[in-house]
Length: 133
Image 1 (cartoon, rainbow, N blue to C red):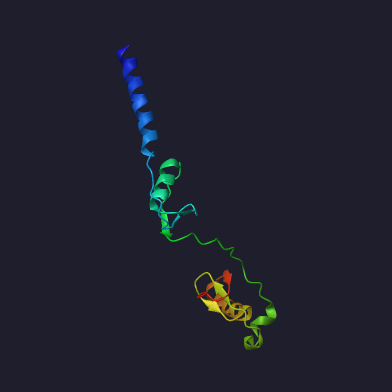
Image 2: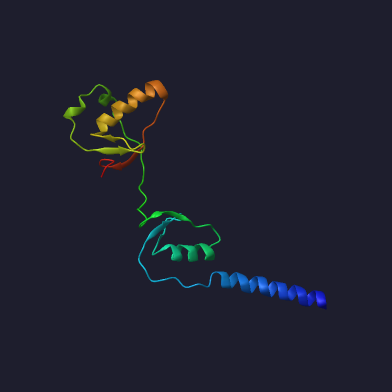
């Protein structure tokens, strides 16, 4: 009987403590942080509460609101671009995932062609527009 009582007490203590660990209030202050789960939390306390309640570990990825995820894609290079005068192409900047900006798809394709000859490299477009934008 003593063993049963001890086990029941320990289970109650462990269960009750688990619930209480996440029972804390957070202040009402807008100081956003982006969580490792891609969710914007109003402040670090809210993130810590979500981490406590979650089965997965949630940490601060960076300060500020989470930026929307961008879809990356491969450039569609026309073989004629390899020998083309890219200055004749319309200005339409592209940002490659390495952080390099290109004036146009033609410029990116020519750079990729040169790199592929020496290193077998594939370029990936992170987003349309300059990397600085």
